[in-house]
Every structure is written in structure tokens, then in C-alpha cells.
Length: 332
Image (cartoon, rainbow, N blue to C red; front, side):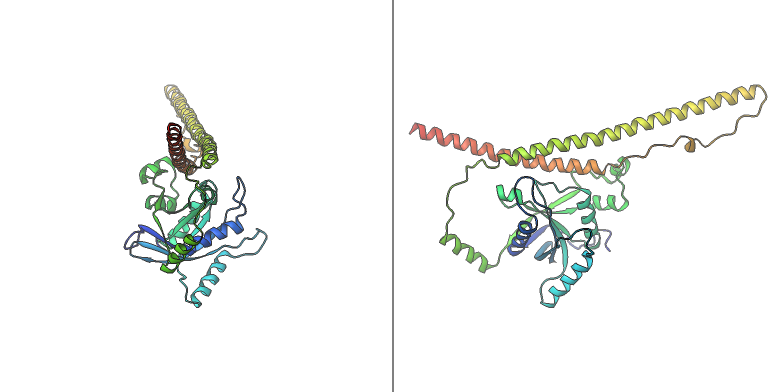
């Protein structure tokens, strides 16, 4: 297993076949359920392909089947069997990552961090594709590729998420994940077919000025406020920890000072001083809370702010354009 960056050239681009994107969308539509507000389940699957220079080519994928906790299902055995069958029919079978659906971009959590670390630890070029069916239904295709940075890999390997560990590694919510640019590639035959279909059935209606993204903007603002509350709770936990540490240290200092005064008085009376005691056992420090949850919450809030900025820019641009067209029509 790789524990350091062993790739000759780091992955700088992810190239996905159009058929793979359609398979992921179909899987999310069938297994994930409806794309309406607040509904739908998260789905996952395996990505197959190969590495060419600094490009990770994703040429195939297959989903994880749905199963309950009571069922005796072995994920590893299922993946091995699927890749063995693909190899028999001469299809790319090299494991290069996994994909997962999400809702409103809520994907930064411990489960994803743990899964991507395990993938990237054993398969250096692994990526995770995040597909958001809700955003796709409201605007354009929303699919992104992410990898853990080298700082995040080293910090997670040692599980050093204390303030000192984060300061030493230089890890923050901004450099925990790196987004890899995605290029969707189709064969020449598929491109010719798409052009022919577009000529036979051209798109009808003009939705370029539609403000249908307003509910997405509102939902992202609501989620951002919820995450701000969660981050505030995590901050209060750390503040309470620092307060408790101060109380323990003060009690320890008072005990040591009192013991020194007693020994001084005993010495003046010609008595033997009291033996030294292990104050670390008498005054135990509280357990320091890890800052991993705060990192994930801050990273998720950054994603929400990016989406809010994007939706707000689109909405304001459409409003100004519509207002200009209205004024021009009134003048004419």
C-alpha cells in the first residue's frame, strides 16, 4: 500500500466517458429515488479506468447494490467478482476510485473522509466523483472530482487533528480536499449522433432568463445557517475544554503551593517534610476534543458560500438583463 506520493506525475485532470456519466445519473435516478426537495437516498459505486500521463481516464463504472444491515453482503467480494467478470469480457477493470451522490452539496463528512483515505492509501490515483441530482435538475450538470491532499493524508494517517498537530502539518479546511478538473469525452460517433438528434428535435422554449434557481439559493442559505450553528457548538466545546484545563492547572498550583507552605512549617518545627506526590495522577487533565469536525464543517460552509455566490451572480445577472429588455421594449 502506498503511504506517500508515488505517482510519477500527479493527477491533474479527470477524463470521463459520456457513457459513464449517464450510468451514474441513471443509478442515482433509479436507486436514489426522487430529486424533489428533501427526498432521495445516497448511492455509491465503483469507478474503473486507467492513468495516462497526468490524466485519469474513467472508462467504466458499476454501482453498489442496495442491501439492508441484516443481509450478509460482502462489498469487497462483490467488487472483486465484478472486476473479474469485466476482465473476462475485455473491459477496463482497473480500480481508480468511487462515486457518490449528494443533496445540495452536503458531502463533507467523516464517512467520505474515511472512505477516500482508504481508497487513496491503497490506490494512489483514486478520486471520488460527487454527483448532485438536485442541482443538475435545476441548472447544469453538477459532477465534481475530489482527492485528499498530501497534508490531509499524513494528518489522517496519524489521526493528528489536535490544534498542535494541525499547526504542524499546515492542514486547514481550505487544503483538505483538492478539486480535479473534469473533462467529459464522447466518441466521434456519439458526437455525430447528438448533432443529428439536435437537428431533428431542436430545443423548444427559452429558459435562459428563468429564475428557477431561487429555491436553490434559499436552501443553501438555510443549510449554511444550520452549519454555522453546528460550528458554534464545536467552538463552545473547545472553549469549555480550555476553561476546564485552566481550572485544573489552578487547582494544581494551589495544591503545590499549599504543600510547600506545609513543608516549610514542618522544617521550622524540626519535623520531616511531607513526601512529594505525583500531581499528574491527582489532577487529571480533560481530554482534548479533536478539531476534525470543525474542519469538515468549515469546509462544507465554504462550499455553501461558493454555491450561494454562483446562484446569486446568475440571478442578479438575469434580473438586470430582464430589466434592460423591459426598458428597451417600453421605449420602442
